[in-house]
Image 1 (tube, rainbow, N blue to C red):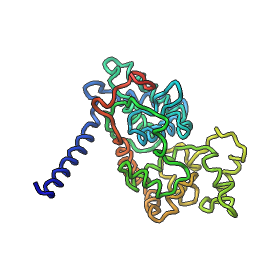
Image 2: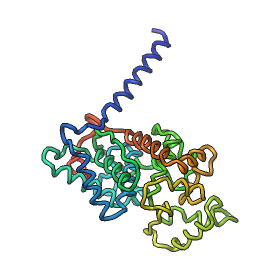
Image 3: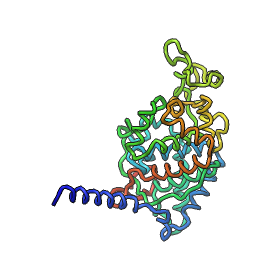
Image 4: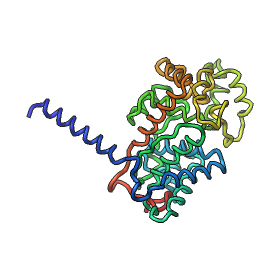
Length: 326
């Protein structure tokens, strides 16, 4: 057989492999086992959101942190007695408890319905809850692909080098996202989730107090905004104090995040880098001026995010308790 034929066969095999992996997810995956699962989850999420707005950014961030480490398999929710699971890694210690609680409450609501008990994975519940918090805060609603199984492995060490840090430059962010098949457009669109996000003073204090020798404040940061941040984040501030990432419309999922970047009001260095770099600035400008373009790109990107490293067949299970393996 010629090398050309072998190459073509390898290409066909790759196409089949991709089709197989995506075919395991479908928007009507539970139509025969738990047909009302989406409305059950949404009602639970809505109740949780009424109790605290933190539900929205916390759930959205939980989904991202789950998918980027070992894939979208709810492994970030697993707890361990000796603090060695993903959630115990220092970068995940800032994940708000309300995100975990949203999934646990939605799982309980699903399992309380006759016929649905132990039929729906925690990974799928997290994916649906993420869509719901986006829609409930003014963002786009979209069809969620379902059929993920829950992972059985969660280690603190596996998180290392798999999640973006607030000081990352654009090149490093692009490399990390590309490793998951996500494009520059996906990266910029998903960063828009920071429109309802919050952070802590320690994540950007260097930008407002000790940027570089001779430059106390990061020159890419709006000076008036930097002074405001210094007021809410004095040098010895309580590290638990939360700061809105969007100072204009912090409780609305909109395209204001990109308008903020245009004004030098990106809270984290990694945010502002999207505007300071020429390769990404045009997309920031597009999303700032066209909310429809942002929402379309965001839905495409978060759907791709939800396909990362999914577990199917004997690779996973449907956990009875989201915090522990069966």
